[in-house]
Amino acid sequence: MKDTNKKWAFLFILVNLVLFLLFFAWPAILGIYYSLTDYNGNVATFIGFENYIKLFQDPTFYKSLSRTFLYTLIGVPLIYCVSLFVSVLLVSNYTKGKNIAKFIFFMPWLVSPIVVGVLWRWMFGESFGLINYVIGLVGGDPVPWSSNGNFAFLVVLFATAWAGTAFNMLIFIGALISIPRSLYEAADVDGGTGWQKFWHVTLPSIRPTSFLVILLSVFNLMKEFPMVQSLTDGGPGSDTTFLVQYIYETGFDKMKVGYASAVSMVLFVILLVFSLLQFRFSKGGKVDG
Image (cartoon, helix red, strand yellow):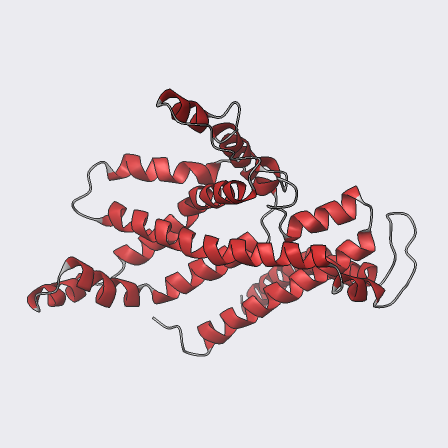
């Protein structure tokens, strides 16, 4: 029996190892190799670190990188706060119609990111959008949602929060309902207000979950592509062109695959740093239950 269990365990490990090598390790090795070449999709000529030298001298790269960091810096707290707020409402004993509300808030998770981008593009179109139509009905002037970079960036943030709330809501609800009721009862005995209970009981109790949500949100926003591509196509100009859009345009539109691979390696290093931070805080004892 033990030998049989060992065989099955080895088989499962082997399958996962093959999948890891095939879909992660091998593409990663190819990406590193192509980043050291002048590869245009046909011929790969080894050029060493020239792509990286050009990359760190390219103002367009720095612009897309800084815009990606700004998007992440604003988007992650926005997603966190909205998700937590919705979750607290949905587990509250004072909320009515919670089952219907859960279904409504979970709907965006069932929709493709491309469809999310198309929906928000339809709502915030300048000449055909629903929002400008409503603004016109009340006598207001149309808002340049598409032609103004700041407004376009704002629409991307709204769409991101709307799409990202569903999954995080499920995670938070699971954490919130697992908090011992005795903690809230003790706070009631001490005369704690609703805000005090949230600040001193709820937030500390869901600290590991909060850390997970923040890290996952960082990864998702740093790699966001289909929703932004279908919503703004990186425009107006390049005002919503984030790092992955820049990689796509460089690699597929301009056929500079080697240069785009170098950008991908930079993104990989950035995400690796966040992964190491996750390991440091989750295994180092600073984030615990």
